[in-house]
Amino acid sequence: MRNLLLFVLVPLFPACNGSSSPPSGFEGTWNYDLPDRASGTNLAHVSCPAQGGAPAVELDIPQIGALVLARDADGALAGRTDQGCSWTFHDADDEHASFASAEATCDNPVIGSSYTITRWTLARDGAEAAEVVDAISHRPGGADCDFVLAAGKRTWVDPDADDDPAAAFVGSWAYLPPDPLIRTNVATVACADAEGNPLPPSYEPQVGSIALERTGPHTAAATDGDGCTWTFAVHGNTALLDPPAQRCGPLTLHHWALAGDGGHAFEVRSGERAGCRVLLTIGERTRQ
Image (cartoon, rainbow, N blue to C red):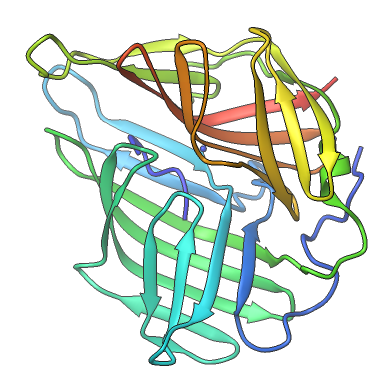
């Protein structure tokens, strides 16, 4: 699951992320399909009550990224997201997996806060899976936010697919115009004072473009407007920063996920600059 608040191309590859069905059950890598604002697919609704002088927040947050599922030593279905959280589905067969808990909590290193998944269900149909998630996002020093993903959809990534998905990311990708109302392409910058006390966050509109090139099978590199080059591993429709900690100048990136369909892409990016956390949860780009 991806992008809890406070915690984010002409088609050149198929709309699905894999070319066949997993050999059995859910084991393997499952990517979110590209979010669709019109249908609500892979859009999580986040509701946060007012706190202090800040008003209540209602946001739809696109979900992207990978979930790797495997059977553990006890035969339970265990999953790990690309943001570093691990979960166990206590009720799972080859077509359905679920858990319900008030204690399934992860301190997410990407978003810098924790969240609790109270219910998570997966229903597999071949190489596709429908997903429903109910969760609570715990805001540091503030009231909790409700998180609901009602229409999640994932596709299994076929490790033996003939096509190299990295080729689909080649080209120039520009940010869409920032929209503060829905938080698209607006990064949150969180700093602390000399005593380590958190300061009020600031917000930075994201502009400009990156140039992506294929560097090998399932690998790509992105060069930004500052001349920094970042490397990615690409599987299915999703490119993930690899290795997961890269530095250029004052900026260190710990996580960067790009999911695209050939002409349109969503992104989530997290890092540090001059001691401040910089987090983009709703990034959106178009191919030029």
